[in-house]
Amino acid sequence: MTSTPAVSGGCPMGYGAQAPADHHGYEPFAMENPFPAYERMRTEQPVMFDERTGLYVVTRYDDVKEVFEKWETFCSENAQAPVRKRGPQATGIMNDGGFTAYSGLSARRPPEHTRIRAVAQKAFTPRRFKALEPMIRENVKASISSMISRGDNHGDIVSDLAYSLPTITILTLIGEDISLVDTYKRWSDARAAMTWGDLSDEEQIPYAHDLVEYWDRCQELVARAHATGGDNLTADLVKAQSEGAEISDHEIASLLYSLLFAGHETTTTFISNCVRVLLEHRDAWDAVVANPKQIPKALDEVLRYSGSIVGWRRKALTDTEVGGVQIPEGGELLLLMGSANRDESRFENGEDFDITRANARDHLSFGFGIHYCLGNMLAKLQAKIALEELTSALPDLQLVDAQSIPFRKNLSFRVPEQINVTLNVN
Ligand code: HEM
Image (cartoon, rainbow, N blue to C red; front, side):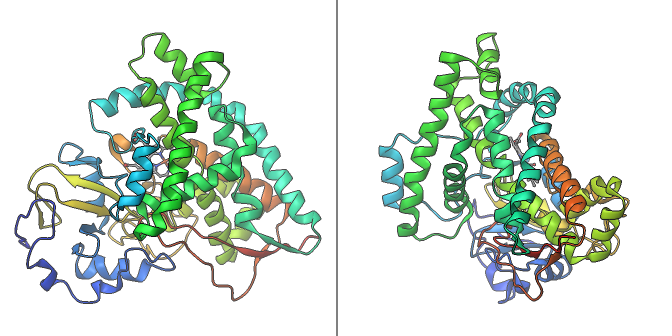
């Protein structure tokens, strides 16, 4: 067992000296191609304290899953905490603006988490998702048509297909005005950057204003649902409260604050990754074109091979141990699901993309245990429809050669920003 001094919450003194200077090639915020570094860490130092972020980085499948599973030892209260401390100006703006949003679910602990999740789960009914399906398909078809009708034989999968679809879906589900897609994308970018980004104090300032506006809007939505009701998820939550469910207005607004971010950012990336990864593996794309019934399996393999979220945080509630490394009480962990999902001990030839893989569904891209992603079905539904329509309308779609796909700097979210394709319309 590797022993590290138990320093509560901070860098275990002396451990930095043991860590190799190159951190096995791992750069916490670099998302272009983190996989070679993940592989090295799994082999050379599967649990590594990274003094640059103050996080114990966990890379093996069994360790990552075990930490997710043991919620009594590893809580999630740091899951939404800013990786870089909030600067004084941003803090002032947010305090003055009455920003009191707290995580809807992901950073809450039982019993509060259990109580709120039970209410939220009741509102996430199959009926609500089913009702959205025709609209999702129409939106996908319209996006593909407008890409084709430009007539330049060119598209960007991110901006032309994946950007607005999941945002319109979640706004509709929540009962929000769908013309606010760009506003919500701006607010969500602010949230991703403020929480998981590597921002200086100055860079935080515009994002702090965005977060104040975003939180105001979530509170307005709750007030509006109280005043006028409606046939949407917000109204369902407010109705459940009036019928005795234990949930406050602040908790409902916090849930909206979470869903209006988690409900589209990750799915925009998921749809983008489905197209990108399948086209990078032409045989797989052609197999799906030939037999769309393979799409559900392909979706799981994309989630395993290239998930939207590659790392998620937990905090040790007691002195403990992971993969033979001691973690002090208060020690913070980064669970690299992006690495766990390629661990050879779980996935044979884990670095290969294979849509026929029998156990792709064992991936950890939606987390595991009590916080398992509430929106996984909705995300898959949208990606399935997007792939069905795209492979049918544009079977000869190709990635533009020799492009280098830009990925945003972030600790957790691996977001491709542009994916250029040639349409090859028949
Ligand atoms: C491909 C798309 C998505 C990915 C990769 C993803 C991933 C995740 C991950 C990693 C977690 C944390 C799990 C944990 O801590 O164990 C999570 C939680 C959550 N996700 Fe997703 N998500 C996606 C789509 C969605 C959508 C579409 C929604 C809403 C409509 C959503 C709502 C939530 C909520 C509410 C939680 C918190 C659950 C809890 O703490 O109990 N997600 N998701």
